[in-house]
Amino acid sequence: MARLTTRFLMLTATAALLCLQAAIYYTRDRCSVACTERPCTPAYLSDEPIQATRPAVAQGSSEDTASARGATDITRFVATTKGLEKTTDYPFLHSDTGDFANTTTLPSGTKGELNLDVWRWPVGFLVDDLRIKRDFPHKPSIRTSVESLKMEFNEFAGVSNERGKYGHRVYGLLHPSTTGEYSFIVEATHITCAFSVELWLSTDYDPMKSKKIIATEHSDAVLPPNATVSPILRMMAGSGNIQLESERAYYFEFLEKAFNGRVITEVKWRTPEGSVFTSIPPSCFSMAVELDSRGQYVLSPMATALLRPLPSQVLQGHKKIKSVTGNVTPVTDLRVLPSCEFSAGYVSKHRVKRFRGVYEVFESSVYPADETWFFRINTPDIGNNQTDTKVVERVLELYKKALHSSSYQNDNARVYQLEETINGLAGSRFHLEMELKPPGNGALIQTSEYVYLPTGSNELCRTTNFQWTPRAFVYLVTSLKNLGQWLKHLVENMEDLYAQTHDDHFELVVVDYDSQDVDVESIMKNSALKRWKYIKRTGSFSRSGGLQAGIDYVTDPNSIVMTIDMHLTLPMGFVEYTRRHVIQ
Image 1 (cartoon, rainbow, N blue to C red):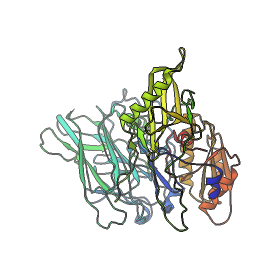
Image 2 (tube, one colour):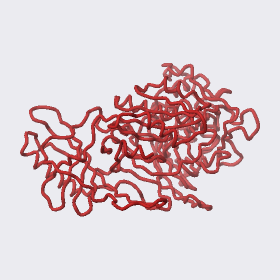
Image 3 (tube, rainbow, N blue to C red):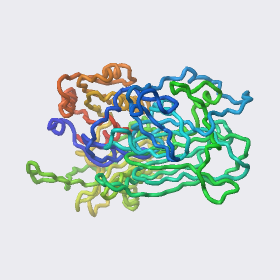
């Protein structure tokens, strides 16, 4: 991989970089990076058919089925993919007849059961991670029913090293036994994973009237990688008092997303006559819609209503899809600062011996706080530290001082993002992004440039030898063999990025070792990507060899090459962040 480092790039800063084997965990609009060993891909991540059926026990042996029922009040879920059907589009998906106005019969499915949809292996632990999947909410991996609101999701059958990556949606109708004020809690125990939950409740049986009454998340994985005894944690989140009436039905929906581990959750209520929270009995709930033998909705007003965009399906803020600065190319030089040369004092100058491990990372800090986080697994918290506000105010003051002698109006200048990298005792380098008013009555402009403040100096300078290149072409390279599901995930991610940013200066390069599970070239041809390259190779799969083949395809020495893993979910500003943190 020497050609990659000598021919193309120098990587800097903290916001959107990744290594060859990386996992990106991100909240809101930023990302941090953790380098991890990527586990082997289980067989069920291929394009094998998957279950979408009710009743829960499908045809075939018990080992080949998914069970969502049990003799105990804990619903255990075990799934495999052998010999089962994939969900298909619903023929009435685009119907506009989901109005209950002319419905004379109260919609209700089987009493004592609830609808359950499960999505296997979506990335992340937030409910929004589930919402951004294209298969949500109409194409779950498994569609069935459950008989309890206490659920344990632990691990998929036959996979001991890949636990608890799932998302599920439990929904149905609530039938209060008496009229009065009810309150609800979501109780979680046996927590060894990061997870989040949301509970939505309608004012009647119409899903469109649903409102979120509970939302909570737990982002710390407390189970060490090789632990044999799981710690048991307990947490609860509750709602306020809600007036419900007997003889009426109320649509509700429980969403949960977990990552790596185990958690038992239960929705409980406190009735008007009760003093403690108790389990909701099966006599007080029913399925929202019946399922046919293929796991599809039986046509009804409620079924059609559920196929409309519901309030519970709207992104709640964790993953608002937007680019770094919209579709505006920022100004990288206002020509108001004096020029200077930058020499990184933190660059190691000693030779590294062969087979020697070296860790020399100099972390940057950011402003404002970007809420990056990492799972704590026997290590300190890892994420982006926040720059001291006094430092930010000082930088803004000095920049306004330089603007004062120019024609730009400095009263409206504001810092909307800053990253500081301390250069030893010599000073600090800043990646500074601002908004300010240009001469005349023009609209606010955005700037993005690297500046430097030497220790003891009262003047910022612009580092002429350390600047990023707007509109630099970015090649995203990956290699694969029989990883069709992950390829589809990556292509959809890139399609969304292109649709949102209209950035036509990036290209997805896919090197395929004669995959048999999907037609890789057809997936690329049928995608909405403007630029892509399919490279076919034969022989034994070699990840490094495939990546090198993709790198060799790039001939422009001024372009940027980024190797990526397909299981990542990249934020919409990823390509632009990459440009801003790569210095030639």
